[in-house]
Amino acid sequence: MRKKMYQNVIATHFREHSSIYLFVIVLFLMGVIFGAIVVNSLSLTQKEDLFFYLSQFFSQVSNEEVATTKDLFKQSLFHNMKFIGLMCILGISIIGLPIILILLFMKGMVVGFTVGFLVNQMEWKGFLLSFVSVLPQNLIIIPIFIISATIAVSFSLKMISRQFMKKLGPPVMPLFGKYMISFALALVFLCLAAGIEAFLSPALMKSVINSL
View 1 (spheres, rainbow, N blue to C red):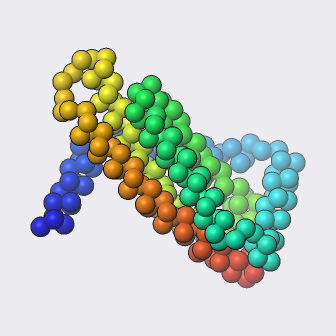
View 2 (cartoon, helix red, strand yellow):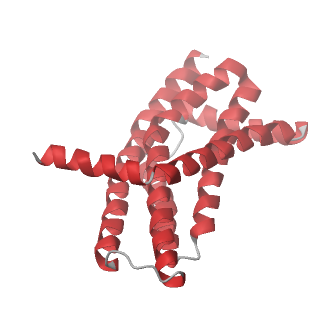
């Protein structure tokens, strides 16, 4: 019974915010495409410099000279927590609405640039490396960022309509409570993503690097 209730709540949420989800997903994909295009605009010297540092990193991974899994977990979790935390604050601040969208676009651009650069420099080997180094944790991180951005945009729009258009709506505090619970749940999933990035991705990268 409770499971069905949760399913109905989730289905209602996605149905009510479908237009925002569509906009946010398209924006993120535009960021990915833009990031991939930026790779082609780099000069040969810039590409060589980046590839040199990338090769050093791969060498460290192969020789197990990277940070410990505990440090990697902390770094990944702290980085993603800052991103989600900033998005949460911007959603409450009302005026932060455009910055939320910019942040999501930049996240997409980083993913697109990373994958695009690896493929550009190493062809199918780069695709394989990006598959094991970028994809595993981002299967969780990207949906969480998209959902969080949608929730933050939706909350910000409700506050704008209430503040400037004087529209009546449900009480603010229950909405705010649901808003904070949503971001708390996002942090739980980001812990899982950080665990994958710290424990699974390096092992997969090492096996791929050693086989190339």
